[in-house]
Image (cartoon, rainbow, N blue to C red):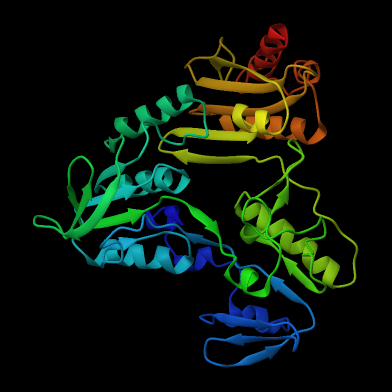
Length: 399
């Protein structure tokens, strides 16, 4: 959606995988702008907001997430947005097009905050980002987060640290004013990108068990603990193959896979969702940022004894013209040498390395395995010893 707002994707229809009309051609009745207010399990029916009751034999909950708001006065004023749904993106793009928008404030420095900084700046609009910490995307190693911060500032994003938002009010030179614990700032639009949480409102009403993450508990077939009720996507948990724990990582590719598993089982098949390793990535201006598996804190929580190394190298062979700087961090278990996680940052090659290491995590490889992987070599793509090899062998020597 940030790429639609930033006008990289020109037509909103390209964000729609399938229209209600196309669904109906295959016998699927899709009702948009319809909210389920209640599930009557005894009667086997759901009640919509307009009073309509729809019977069911099997129920699938795919309620997704709901965006968090800081809970401050004025956060619902016109010109203050969150970005979660397709309609949010359409509304934001319309606002930017119809309102003389000279400046945008973004609150929050996670994935959405990063992608929206790029989208807004590429439209030629002044961008200011407020963050409660000192570095963006704090899942990544501080050394990598510092690189992301430098990239933001290089492209003219004003990054304001250690900020607590207090209120939104009418501005003088711009439409809105954000009041913080430090200074106030004005803008023509404010985007609240402070996080999301699983939307489990209906699940709670039904008394469905929730996991430690606050998301709906499911098994490997996407069934809840209630007969005939499934849950898929951002509202439910997934099994993490590295930590061995149930987690909630709201990503579109995970939701797609879980939906297919549930559909196959409802249709009479026998299919499981084998889990995840936590692979994720984003782009901010000219920088690729990616991670997979566990970081040190998560590794400790999962009972491991983590050790890590962070190395810098070249995404291509050193003999090739041009330096494509690439940073790679590996985390492993000191006791067994098992790979636990990886992070990468660079203008090229970061996502491809993390995808490779995601496969290694999926297969349960050790540092000895990773340090000698047979990877495709050609000077335009890597050195004969790839940075993956270098990092794995470096970390193995530390154990």
